[in-house]
Length: 291
Image 1 (cartoon, one colour):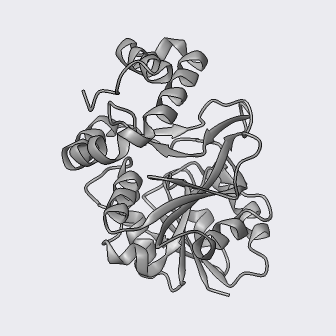
Image 2: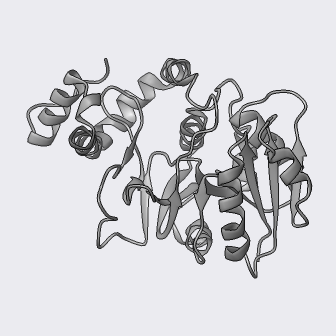
């Protein structure tokens, strides 16, 4: 069996870390693994808690401020496993969550890039992630978001243009071949950028639909501060590629996801995006390329 390196970057939210780690430990029984947690200057007791964790934990307590990309890249450099597993501390893992994801590395047509899974939100019971799609306005969307339940009859694996790094894995050589996460992104879009770089290199991304985890989505302080700047960077690099290569195939699923979100959160609806989505779902012309 390959050795697994679980990489987790944290900043505060000790309450969620305490919830995550016991489920992680229980789910990895029988696997050769290490768990590397990189703390980004937490101030809520997280550092003291991490310092007391026994093997197979290895904790890196940063002395300067990083970000999601910097911290995960640091964790990878400190790791020794064959398979890299990127995991948020706001997840809960049932037994059996990782085996379907590992199976995808060999079972899916390749070369396989990132493997994600299905994620649901405990507070609402709704789906948060089946995969990532790209609408005509180019901002990536979690397909399936706001569904009341996981769709029935899903295949064992589904292919997507990207998956979220809240929980995903890949082979070490795959990650290192494209240079890891782009550290210019600050806590957002770095996972999408990584998936796009891997796709450009010929890799294919999947979700393992038999792996369903809970994602509490408890944002660390400052998590969304740079969202706009991250999107600007993503589009400045990838707009033409997304519009030309990804939107034509993704537009129907993206439109349905946007309309479902509009019903769930009408106060956040953008009229232009709503109209575009309706036109796509109704088959009224080709989707526009971009804003």
